[in-house]
Every structure is written in structure tokens, then in C-alpha cells.
Image 1 (cartoon, helix red, strand yellow):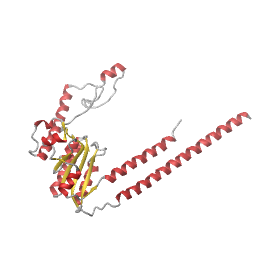
Image 2 (spheres, rainbow, N blue to C red):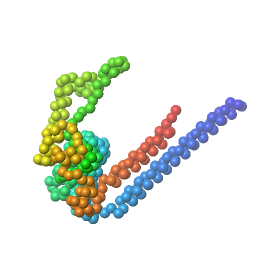
Image 3 (cartoon, one colour):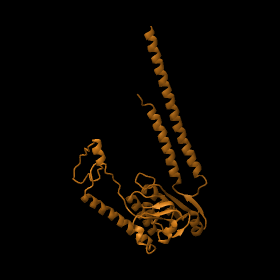
Image 4 (spheres, rainbow, N blue to C red):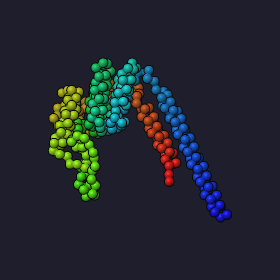
Length: 299
């Protein structure tokens, strides 16, 4: 009899636990649904009052690390510039840059695509560096007709780097051996368990030099005779004030100064603001969904 009571107690406990899980899942799903509704409402609300049919200057945010999967890449930047170019009510474009750099390839493609736009239309494309316009961030900035920055902005870092680690000594002390299997004798040259040979080091230096020379060539074409210092291509970076002296930028100014001086203070419309806002909310919704999913997986 006592055993029956124990079994009944365990069964009741399990039933209550299952019911509790179902309640939490329902609440989680309701929160996700509510969040999606909030996204739609907020996006609609943020869009109200913005008219792309009135005269304006387009602001394109170039904010964050440059990478194929990051906040700054070709797909996240170029379509907005194309939209502004094709809009007759858009009188000009300002790229607002806050980027320390990143992918050499993405930076190069964005630079090239912007220059293609400049060849087929006469709209001015100005770039304004706020906090940082370094390395790939400066590469993109150099695509503009003029470059502006704040006195305290960080500008430059025209160089290329490849990061790798050698942990072979540490692994030996720990008694850990690498078991990488590959075809091609040079395939594992960046394996952190192996020391970099002189042959591989030379090959990588040649590769980086080629990319660096392309970077330098594009900056020289863009900045023409404005750059008068040889050390601007060594990877050094400067404040906006110093960058102005050596020709990396044209003026000390903010986007508002540029709008006042070159566009007579017309309305500024950020073309990619809503996308970033929507993505942030979507990321939050996904995190909540994952939390709801992992809640049900336990021992």
C-alpha cells in the first residue's frame, strides 16, 4: 500500500512538472509572438513621417567590423547606396563611418562599387569618419568625393595583417598531439600546432604585400596628390587633426557641418537605420526562442 502511494506521488509530481513545462513554453511562444508584433508596430512607427519623395540627403551607416557575415558588408551597404542614387529626390549621399576595418575583400568590393556609381551619376558622395575610420574603414571612406572627420577621430591604418598562433610548445608540455589529416604539403601551414617555416612565412608576406599594394594603389588614385607623406601607408593611424595635415582627409567636420555647408541644411534620412533596428529585434526574438527550446532539454 505504501509502495502504491509512493508511485502515485511520483506520477503526480511528473504530471505537474510536465504541465509546468507546457505553461512555460506557451508563455515563451506568446512572448515571441508579442515581440514580432512589436517589431512590426515599431518599424511602421519609425517609418512614419519619413518621406523619400522630398528633397533630402541620404545617410548610409557604415558601422562596425567589415566582414561577409558582419554588420558591414557588400549586401548591407551597396543596395542602400543604389537606392539613394536612383532616387531623384536624394540630392547627395553621406557615408557615416565608424569602423576599425576587417575583411580586405569586402572593403575592396564596396570601394569599387561606389566608384562605379560615381562614374554614372553626378550625385556627390561624401564620407564622414566619426569615431574610427581605420584600415578597411578608411578604404571605404576613400571612395567618397571628399573625406571629413572629427578632430579626435582615429584615421588611417593603411596596412594588412594576418593573425595566427603557434601553440606547439604548450601542447608538448600538456602531452597533446595534433592529428590533422590533409592533402597537399602546404595545406596546414597555418595550423597552430605547427611552427611556420621560412618558406611559408615568405609566401604569406608576399601575399599580404600584394593585397597591401592594391590598397595603396586605390588610396593613391582616390586621394591623388593630396597625400604628401610617405609613412601614411605603413599601418600608422592618426587623429583627425593630424590626418588633415598629411592629406588623409579634406576637412574637420561632422555630418551636420557637411549638410549645412554643401547641402544647405536639407533633411537627412538614414537609409539603413530600419534594417539594423529590425535585425537587432530579430536577434532578440531568436535568443528568446532558443532559451525556450533549451529549457525543455534536460536530464
